[in-house]
Length: 230
Image (cartoon, rainbow, N blue to C red; front, side, top):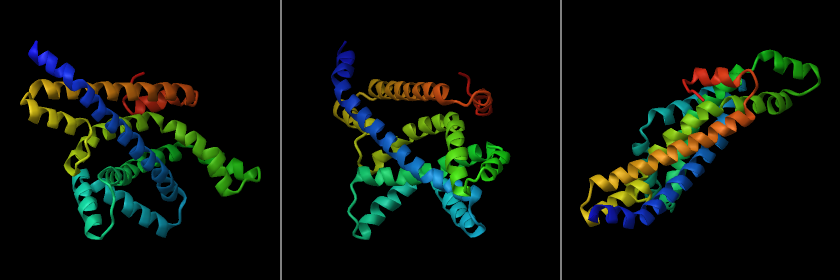
């Protein structure tokens, strides 16, 4: 009973940590989305020098361990005299890291749009930019939803790394409670269950979004390609 009471008393702090985790996840996915789409477009439609530059960016951030990037940016910016809170550093680093992965999600979705649609749009008088904006991108973003939900679940769990630079998210809250109470097993079981709830709740909401905006005839095919069953 005492252990159950401990878990019950710890829940407000754990939920506060979960709130920080969710906020961080939403922010960094947004940064990754805003950067990932232009990177994908540059890789598919850009001139060769731009493709080489963008590919270097994408491969660099995909190759670097996220914990190493956090340390380099957190202490490197301070060394250069740039004052950025730990939360802001985490959003920046995770956003850049996620944008590299998201760019490949969107690149695959863009390349799945048949070239004939772009040619038809040009034949109707659209410029290349207009054809990409009004014909290619709306379809590509919808096709990318299944893989993007996988990115959400991966990023959500990776946010535990911000523990290393002092952001008090879910894992750090659990660690602080454990140090005060010396109860390791039950506290981290509770942390694991909260991660489980957040992961399945987020992917369920994204699946609803996918069903709502999926392209008829293609949505099921894309789900099979990514090994997901709805």
